[in-house]
Length: 247
Image (cartoon, rainbow, N blue to C red):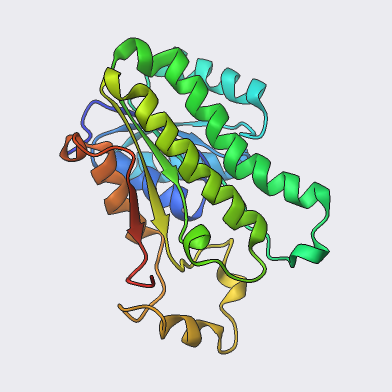
């Protein structure tokens, strides 16, 4: 198992890609700190990990709050003593035209996707990884800032910021042996996106994808393990596209 003995913190792991990543990390031997703002969803992921022979514990916190994140990381360290892997997955996607998007909605997307990743990264680095002189930080990016598209300005802007944050993090902590990378999913089917794939939309999108299908949450998990493991020890500041060949 590639992650035996590691402690992994996965945000937004109550569903979708975060849940798939948490489940796969546990299968690879990691003990998983499962975060989600929805405590019942986090607990369900933990129950499923444990029922499959893995180890996990739920930590409910809103990543939009630096105080909540700091408290959660403290609780994880009290429970497990260290954090070896951080996967910044928590995020939201709101489909809205630029001219219709109010300040509050824009702020919500940026706060969750970008600020949340920053708060978690800062807390885990300062409270665990820098003292350990080791760690893997993985950010959930997207193809969105690379290809653009209507109705996703706030999401694309937030994920473009995530890539910038990842690359700065990678260069800042590389001297300690800590790596930072990002995964950029393509068109994925999750609870957050499935409402979009209606009518002929799914067919039109599949025609743009070389592999001819939309991605599933489990398609991300292999890349997530790779970037968290020793197999990627000489890879940092990299965006790994998991998009079926859509760009």
